Length: 261
Image (cartoon, rainbow, N blue to C red; front, side):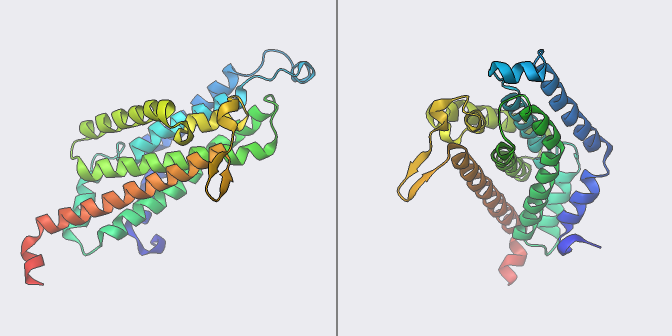
């Protein structure tokens, strides 16, 4: 049974839970986050850590590690870096079938959202374990997941845009790497409130300046929530641009059919 009758939802489930390379990427994700947890686990006993009142940055480190891993994987998944034939499939759907560009992008975006939730679930046990020695409470899990999830969704939509615009995988990889690095550097220097790493640092108040709420005309919101909102807006904007690009591609490649209508 096809999910919601959208071929890209159905294809996403079959590809991302059956392809060997992608399945190995899940194991790599768990391994890297587990290693970060192990390296930043305090050498003293848990009782000694609690009595000293000096908590290590294990939770923050695991959060940033999970964010960096999902940023890399999100870029690769979004640009179909693990499926070289997907560019041909995407163009075939756009040019040779009656499926609208909006349906194509909506299917890709919805699967990206659902798949991101699955990836976050893989990281939750490590976040919970790191909280035990970081002096934080269970409610901190939700802000961390919101920041990482929203940022990952935005990166996946950026990957989708490069998939639409660039034919060669090498060109897509270069564009993705440069774009992500440029965003992190510029945002950290000019607009920290939209930087996911700054937002993660603010959750446990490791950066007191960043932890301050953002003042808006209608009130104020937590620092981390501003990053979440901006990431989601960026993801939707990128998805819309990809949809418009597919529509323009279809009009250019099928001029005769458009004139006869």
